[in-house]
Length: 188
Ligand code: 5GP
Image (tube, rainbow, N blue to C red; front, side):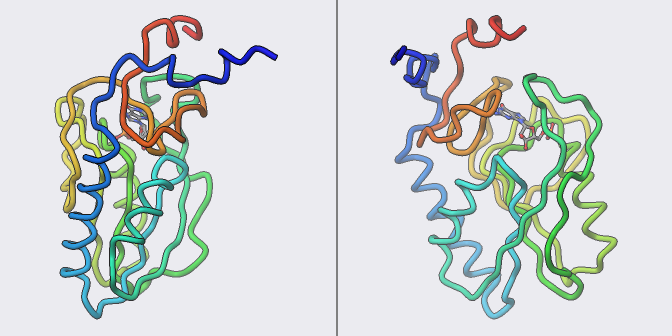
């Protein structure tokens, strides 16, 4: 068996945000969300698959009554650039009519995914709608979208880890890092 193929850390060029910084930030976001949603019983909607790690940690960081649901949209596949077309792949299980919705997203890049989901979800008449994103790349924005809770603003680099993938790998890293160029070049 070729063990080096399994060592995903060898593919990482550098750590952008380490595990402790991520954990501290998620706890801080959890405190704010707990304060803002007290007695509102919000539904935290996780955008699959990238935000599952954030959702799991965020859930533990909030101390209010809340529920969770999942939604999936089309992803980049093996590319590091968006196709610009967002499609719903999997819908929510429950109705959000009259509910306080907090959309939980790993990263906002062009903003197209969030803009699409916001428009889609608002047609279902939630009591309120807010977005929580761990990462935001403001330089890449193509559409204007308000983010209510942001973990970190980052430069225009493709990042992996803490739920974020490249070609379905690296989600299990507990930090946010950049990939060595040879990883894209191999597939490009
Ligand atoms: P947007 O629609 O804002 O351009 O992109 C949102 C989605 O693109 C995110 O949910 C994420 O799946 C993917 N994405 C954007 N930037 C990155 C990145 O730097 N790394 C990874 N792994 N995914 C990204």
